[in-house]
Amino acid sequence: MAHEGLIRTIFFFTVLILVAYGETVAPQRKLTVAKTGRWFNNLGIIFLSSLLLKLTVPIAATGIAAAAAAKNWGLFNSFDLSPGVAIPLSILILDLVVYLQHLMFHAVPILWRLHMVHHADLDLDVTSGLRFHPLEILISMGIKMTVVAALGIPVLAVLIFEVILNATAMFNHGNLRLTDKLDRRLRLITVTPDMHRVHHSVLIRETNSNFGFNFPWWDRLFGTYRAQPVAGHEQMSIGLSQFRKVEQITLMKLLILPFTGDEGRYSLKYIGKNPTPKKRF
Image (cartoon, rainbow, N blue to C red; front, side, top):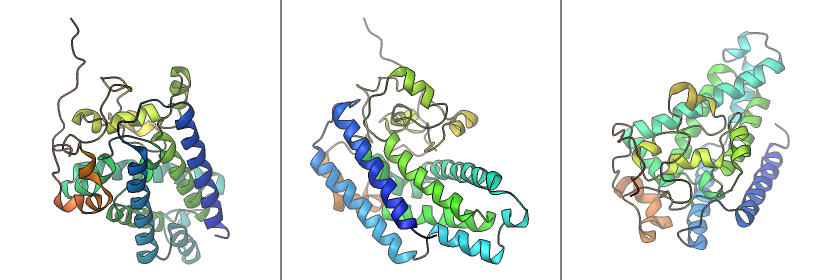
């Protein structure tokens, strides 16, 4: 699609700047480690993941969608669906795929090892939303391209979905303080920072909840929704229990973490006990 790169770049930096600014003026939590080192690690991972994707997958998901349309591949191309039906339906299906894929990365131990890189962050902010091991990014792109080709998803739907996914990932990982009223209303249509922060709790049962990225409905539908962390957003601990020191999660160590790190007991095969508030006397 013409100007795809420009469109994605404009939306990416606009959301990045807005969320980063919001974190400085209205943060939800105090940071526990220096932002400089975390941003170096996170931006380094993001750069390497993007580079690997460019080198190994020269054709983007929109390219697969264009090829499917030209060759009449996929389920949607077998029906005469109007763009007003095909595009929203495609975005909804792709978001469900991302939800199920996220579950899969928690359920399969070898995939969880890759996904640990995302969860090992000791704080959450706008950069955390894009911090994924390069191999996880590659697997995710392979899944997305397969679904696009199999269903014959329109090019415009793929572009819109990817723009939304990047924007919501940065937004719902942001260290943003929203009013309770605004948070409740936004949760009707999208995943908010407070909703997703529960997923990054150090407590296993909380980690294995709130898997949605764009839309909040899948967690409610499939029973993985958890409204709030038991310790509260300001007091909860972020990350994984086996990686609590900054020196354990430097850029180079993050790259080899899936192959050398302790997987802990966060995989879905260890569902964990339901966290309960501590009693106060």
